Amino acid sequence: MKGLEILPVGGIPEVRPGDDPSALIARAAGDDLLKTGDVVVVTHKVVSKAEGRLVDLGTVEPSALAKGFAARYDKDPRQIEVVLRESKRIVRMGRGIIISETHHGFVCANAGVDASNVPGDETVCLLPLDPDASARRLRDALRNRLGLDLAVVVSDSFGRPWREGITNVAIGVAGMQPLADYRGDRDPHGYPLTASVLAVADELASAAELVMGKTIGVPVAVVRNYPYEKGPGTGRDLLMEPERDLFR
Amino acid sequence: MKGLEILPVGGIPEVRPGDDPSALIARAAGDDLLKTGDVVVVTHKVVSKAEGRLVDLGTVEPSALAKGFAARYDKDPRQIEVVLRESKRIVRMGRGIIISETHHGFVCANAGVDASNVPGDETVCLLPLDPDASARRLRDALRNRLGLDLAVVVSDSFGRPWREGITNVAIGVAGMQPLADYRGDRDPHGYPLTASVLAVADELASAAELVMGKTIGVPVAVVRNYPYEKGPGTGRDLLMEPERDLFR
Image (cartoon, rainbow over all chains, first blue to last red; front, side, top):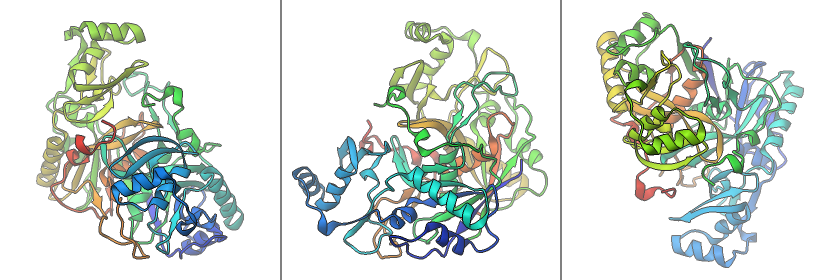
């Protein structure tokens, strides 16, 4: 197997509602960066902003629940209210953090609502309404624009129980299967692999984060030479079904 | 920022107790693969086997707890017994899976005890006794052997709540800080980053897994051009302290 390359795509300007992410990415990548078979990993904020998933906190009337939690932890009650609205189930509330299940089914801190890398003090950014649809649209638009067959991963950084730090994961996927299933294969000793379903889309998102940083203005990265399985996989495939989830 | 390269290191033979992992890796990598500043990611089984962390199930007398659980889910009671012995706290038991906290503090399925990629039907492989010590020894031995200053990550694949699939994480670290802390930095709009501690050692382990696969005999990968922060960081730094953990 050849080595992989993880290539940063910088120079993408501040994204505004109505922008076409494929145009911004194609322009920033230049004529010869992208190649058929590449995986394009895009921070969700690029598509969220283009889709207008921004909330002006000046328009938000916080509930009593939001006001109480915000007062206790010195948070903005309007931002807490947005987190509650983006949630369908609260998993934990404590120490100023709300861990909830979003309407998409992601379990993450603050329902993915974030004020960083957003212009203005009074605006927060939401997750895309349907990150798989965002990924599909971007893949189709890049194919139409560049004539290349690419996979697209829309990413966000999530915390996780028991371990410090956040890691990049895939919230939207298009053009590839996000899970690599080795069950039924055998190891070099002939032993059947039983617990070997790898979340490769999450690993691709994590690999891409290594060239993105948080402050250096690189919201897109390209993973080259990864032999992904083509298919109709989605980010939803990475959500554990409630009846299989030991933590529900 | 330059792109990263993720380079597979294949051709490592079956590791036996007493083998020197640095010799096996140096031989497989050849004279000119490794360069100063590379991160060497090693599947824990390479160091576990070299350290003799193998258990012959023929020597294991299962407890009543192990026998009952194994009978209910058609598992080998002796392997369940080994999982219990490697655990200091059981987090969940169900559907044939034991999620526990190991003596190191890792929360994972089956305490990291695994029969795959191990020769013989009656042998299971444990996690290294001290994966950080394993990483340090390998880093020191590679430096002595090759004259190169490298970072070393010892990896395993862990499942996680709420999401399907397993991903590679760092269980032992030497020569680098496993967390990249952006708190106090500001985004391009001047907004302070508050929740931005990235678990980059886990992301490096995940990136490496993309060239390892499960069956293709690539237990080592090299990540080149990643500007890690040098320092005395460890895999233990990635374990969330109980008093900070909302899931305990």
